[in-house]
Amino acid sequence: MVTVGGFAHVRPVVIGGGSPVVIQTMWKEPLTLDSAEETERVLGRIEGLAAIGCRLLRFAVPQIEDADVLGRLALGTAMPLVADIHFDYRIALRCLDYPIAKLRINPGNIGGEDRVRAVLEKAAEKGRPIRIGVNAGSLPRDLREQADRGEIALPRTLVAAAERELAVFDRYAFPNVIVSMKASSVPDTVTAARLFREKHGGASPIPLHVGVTEAGPLIAGVVRNTAALTGLLKDGIGDTIRVSLSSTMENEVIAAREILALFADSTSIRLVSCPRCGRASFDTHGFTERWQMRLYAAGKKATIAVMGCVVNGPGEARAADLGITGAGNKVLLFRHGEKIRTVDVEDADRAFEEELSKLE
Image (cartoon, rainbow, N blue to C red; front, side, top):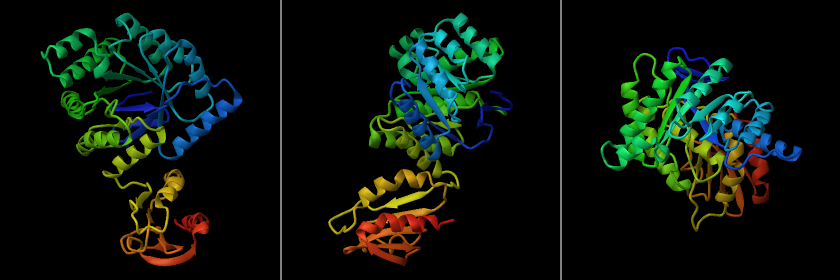
């Protein structure tokens, strides 16, 4: 990684410096790769994540043997992989023997300055970036106790922990750094990010990774992350994001794409679908579930409408580049409110696929 003028290069991804915000997620199960079939499954899922917009993929590396597994995986994919390391600095050193694109360490538990220095020196030699990942749940002991006693507000504690680690990085002239400060509280997460940017903005701001940690299940987690990220992103705070959810990696990536689409002219598919009611003659839920991943991976900029009946079909989705709706015992396909085809329900997927392929 090379950092010049406030951007970071997690090859081949650029973070900060005015580059588009980078979406990332985290692998949610132990990584074994104990068979060719398992390796193919993992690589296939990584390809699927890349197709829907994930640009960085982080893995927990709890044991030194896991570093070897992740290293082998890094040799087989173009996706930049990130090693998430706690407690044992030797795991970080082992990861740096492989083409793992980036490290994430926690200043609250990685060890003393001598251990951090060993990681920095090897990372500098290998040209790899490091994210200082500060979490409210694993602060350095003295800062945690100050926060518990109410002597310092939690957001300022998060910033202080990040700054303490940055001072070590500065002592050893290691500039290739990204910072995150996360809490499960939306206000604490937002305040910490704003405080840090106020103090470390300037002409070459340190790239920030933003998101709410332990945000909850799908609905609660999306709401909390949206509440936190929309205000920060609107003000230009945040260079890479993760929408942390107790849900699938794919849902994390899609949620991040939808949040970013609020602020930029996105190349993303915009999927509009009705909630369904007693009038519905078409299973919008099942159809949307079948097509969601394919649509986000399609690489098209288009509005797609999936509607349940003629009441909320072409009329309410006149702006859709392509739409599908129930119409009695048939299914109607339309463009910009104009009917183009009527097919039997069992032919809905085939007809939709044909019309989707015609979109530019």
